[in-house]
Image (cartoon, rainbow, N blue to C red; front, side, top):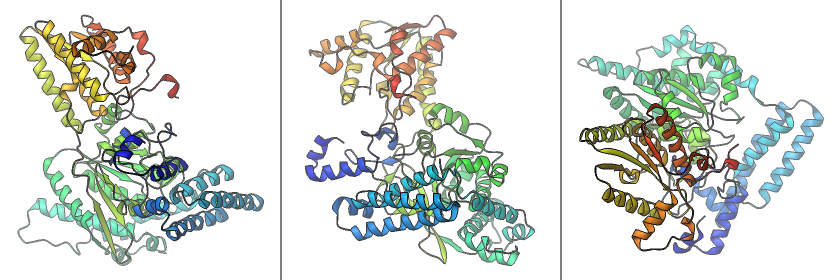
Length: 583
């Protein structure tokens, strides 16, 4: 937390201390837990934050109750709800009497300790108690039998004649006599989507059925589906149906039983040119599907056999895009958490999937409740299932922040290919192409100075050399781009075979830049060169690979051995990670 910025905004030191204590006590402060909590750059893949704004993974009312100490009854009520969920879980699952009583007492002690200060988030307490329960009980999938039974029943439902008759019934299909075939097809799809959403909404009633009948199912499928989220979904499906391009939806937190209905929805979406990334939980979280469920539940294993299961929790942008561009249309990832939606703790893979998605659909009512009652904006449109009403299904809509920019893979490739075309023209004129790799974001607080150094030195080289085209990456930056976007775009250019000289920034380059500015080298820049940048380290690896294919390409800069201090570039910016930081 930048205390200087907070002081400028007029916040009191006492208030800032309470906020800092809130983040550290809940183990969601990046500065205190850098290996568990997302960096600000990774968080910005998902949450749009203003300068100096901090994100908290709860409703505004919950946060204010903790920080302002003015709504303690509300907070205590939510703590009690956590206990009311955990206690019956323990008593129903743990059969051994001694272990059950031991576990209940242990969890109760932990619960009293964590709630005493009224600073803990209910969701974080819930996660901690679940973690204790799993470790002590040694049961990885506590509700496996119940969840598998729900999936079995829905699987049988989907294979029944009654379901096929109900889902294909013409009732409710409103058509004009002159409706074109395309419009008829769209309305049929929309009607089926509504029926499937409605059926999932009535899951408890479906589970209570003794047998399946068309009449009962038609009743469960007739719940009114309304809300701005549904209107938005219809609008984008019409748009995407026309453009004939692949689009991506992140489908978050499916629930047991209804997950199979979700797959029926997804099959319809695929016909609109949509690929769906299904995000499941990393570990047990009540009725939500986990990666273990996908792998071990026989009904899910069968249903997901055509999907691409992505088990990497820190997948790179390039690897993710390669998978998304494959022939697969359904992908499964694990969000890295065992709690309600918390972008501060989600995996790198989830963050990148969120960033690459066109839309995000939230299936979990718990997630929807928190997101809808938070003042934060996100980088993608979000469709939320609301359960505050019982006679209709409201799908809410949380629009992305108006200033959130998304550079699609096609956008980045187009920019790269435009530059490649320009370089080809320059080479036909007999010019030599140089790519200059330099420190940009690796020295904290020095981003603007790094850009200034880069600009001054590259201009110096341009004046000094005749017939030399120098690519300065900083000159091609656009607002909204992050390092993932830049690295993806530049790799296309770097592997084009058009670079004659690849120069990496040396300390002598930095000294010369300050000399040209008429300034002395400040302490934070002394001894620095490209080897201090994890981005440059990645680019040196690419340069060496390119040189094997084109031995005539010249590499200028620090020796490769000096780059070995870095192993990979970070998430969202080219920040430094030492080898010791990487497991």
